[in-house]
Amino acid sequence: MAALIDAIDVKRKMFFELENTPFLCLEAEVSTPTARGGQTLVRLKMRNLLTRAVFDKTFKASDRFKEPDLETVPASYLYSDGDGFHFMDQESFETLTLSGEMIGDAVDFIVEGVVIQLHKYNGNPIGLQLPTHVELAVTYTEPGARGDTASGNVTKPAKLETGIEIRVPLFIKEGEKIKVSTETREFAGRA
Image (cartoon, rainbow, N blue to C red; front, side, top):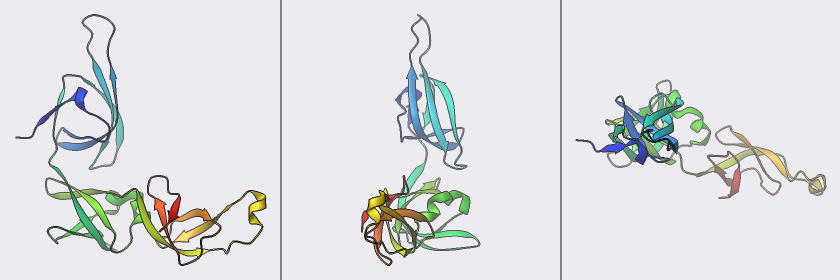
């Protein structure tokens, strides 16, 4: 039997199950009443891991959730086609497929061979978790000209191998590998 989690114990980045659906807690806020006999309430901002929808819901502190049958496995990206995005489970070596909706805007950071964490719910793939930084090659950028720093504009646009365009420092050249933050979509350093 799955363990039960009290609503008051749910913290940020925790997984829980509500109505047979896995959720990720994005924010948890506890409000304790000042009046006698008042109930302690817990407001959760949560993401449905199947539909990716985000919403707020308030629970009593004594409400309980099941721990979801959620597993995170390392998987390497193979290719994409009309059926979706195909990954190879690094432990069982089976091919797992995610739809475009499940991938979302993470498609901007996925290149062939990259290893990411894949979420499986009841044995089926439902989504992925990107690392904080990914290494991508610069496919096009203008050469930085001397004296460009006088205007205060010390970055330039660069197109990366996945098609995403970000701003990079002037010293970055075409063909170089750079680190990109998956959260902010910004340049994070040379690879």
